[in-house]
View 1: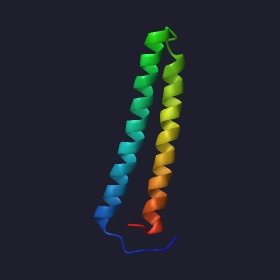
View 2: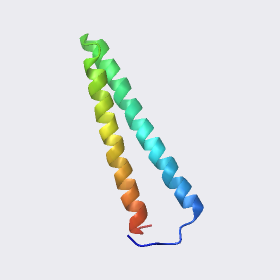
View 3: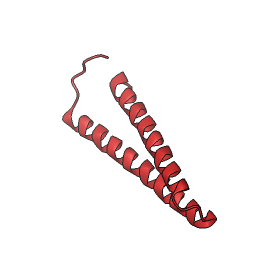
View 4: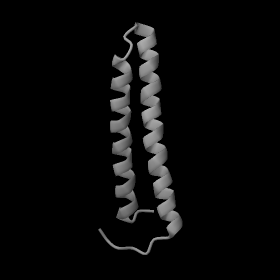
Length: 74
C-alpha cells in the first residue's frame, strides 16, 4: 500500500460508503428473509439465512471499497 496524502473528505466518504453498504445489505437480507418466512411459513429460518447473506455481501462490498480506495484509482 502506498501512503498518499488523502483529503479528510475522502476518508469521510469512504466511511459513509462502508456504513451504508453494510447496513443496507443487512437490512435487505433481513427483510427479504422475513418476507420468505411469511410466504412459506418457516418463521426464523430465512430470516437467519438472509441476515447471514446480507452480512457476507456487506463485508465483501466493504472490502472491495477499501481496496479501491487504497489502490489510488480515481
